[in-house]
Image 1 (cartoon, rainbow, N blue to C red):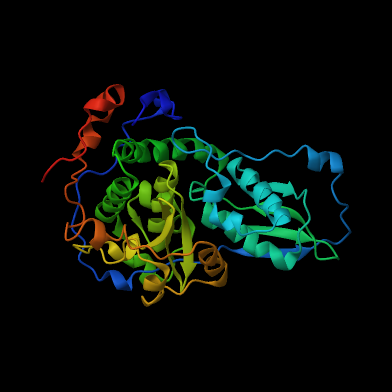
Image 2 (cartoon, rainbow, N blue to C red):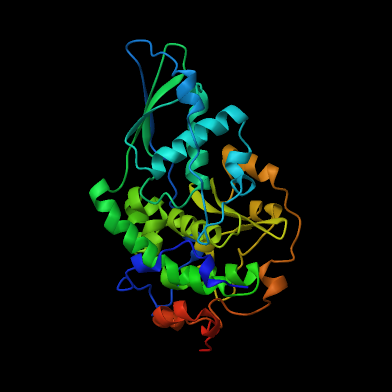
Length: 359
């Protein structure tokens, strides 16, 4: 049951002049041609002098940034599938990187040592687990010592600190209505369909960027999908993962074949979802597939890091596939999302909010 007082959002800080889209144009392009995920830029340089290990006192004083959903509930580590697959020492490095990005730090001295050759997978794990980091496309540089231990990390962001405040207000204000109304639905699968259909209807795939070969930066983040409604597969998948996590549904990004899609957990079973390729389809064919089903879809061979996560999350159930659960119900039906126009009143009286508005 939805409880208004449970929201972690301060509604007084929401600017509802940033309204999400409620009028859509039908997309008819071939979904199977859509891709556009690129690896973050990670560069390194050896220190000219040896760097001492940080003191044990500094290491003992480190505290993790607690990740929460829209209701203020801590997101359990078990929902961070990439982090779960790491060793304990690598999890500590993961936590340092995540905390630094959440605080928009430009430089940190790493408290826990990790070898240069192991570092890239940890950075990618942070990036693929945490779509709420929309001001960061995973780009970093780092220094390492003569023993191959990473010592310092330098972060590159898509917004300046001065720009971040306004960008964050826009992002939260435009994502809140989707989270708010999805949260009113009774089951996780209904919440999933509500968000999935909204992304398919509201987002325009950026063919200009794909055809030009220039689709890095914001197009690799949820910001492009949530705020600008024009993105490539990375934006679709990161926006979907963001909404799922905010609703308490475990979900991360899967990366492979120059493409990005999602892994999610529903009632203890794991499924794969490709919102990008579902866009424009009347009945979405890539909705909650098993791992073996998705592996048989061209362009969905995961790179080793994502493949290792999939091995931790075995997938056999077809209970929540689209055909099993929704049958031939078209994408977007029965949602029109006109309820977004009532959100100011509905926040005060959520029990009266209408979600299913027939076309």
